[in-house]
Length: 149
Length: 158
Figure (tube, each protein chain N blue to C red):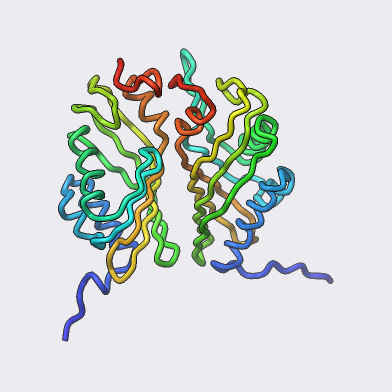
């Protein structure tokens, strides 16, 4: 009898694999690492929802808006079933994102994503970054007029 | 000869140090917070960046030179500053990750935000490292500063 490779992977390995897939813009593969009822919280977007469709949308929006998106992971910290990844996301805007119109600006944002892994699948994701830094880089002037350049 | 021994660092003891840090923060005991950190503890508040005409000031440096003045200033501007810790996870290497809300009501200027008596509450993620002497030797924090600005009524993206 052979054991499932997923179940023999550590939480850190599962999250690293997710990040590798995301860095390759392979959203489908990244989402496959998540439980169907994964809880997704993206604090800067005010998003708190459940399900892989939501996760798919979060990742797809980023890849669509920044087609040259580069994910540079600096640390993956395992604390039991919780894994925290620190990384920089860089890219050039090519489509609207989070209400900001495309002005072809370059983005570089340090982020922290906290994952919970249960039974070989990602069951919770909480993403932290600073929307002020994001809007500053995308040349947004006001929070109450995000779409006006 | 008297020997002073430090209990061994474990996931639990590292988490206890960080829990005490947040207790002291809630009590506005900045000296006590600093005492829990090593003399050269690293500090990085990632969202802190002030863009000038020729340079950008960042919230990076040491606890004693950047962190302590920043905490003192925050408490001065938000006299009811408080925190609610939602989760603390740790490992035997001294890594401690904390999800906490920080909140307060503005009474004095904070950066470019003029005081309007408004209240903010914002989720934060803190990443600590606790050394073998059970002192915090690194603090990194992430949050959405834009959320704080908007809650305080400051709509400019500075």
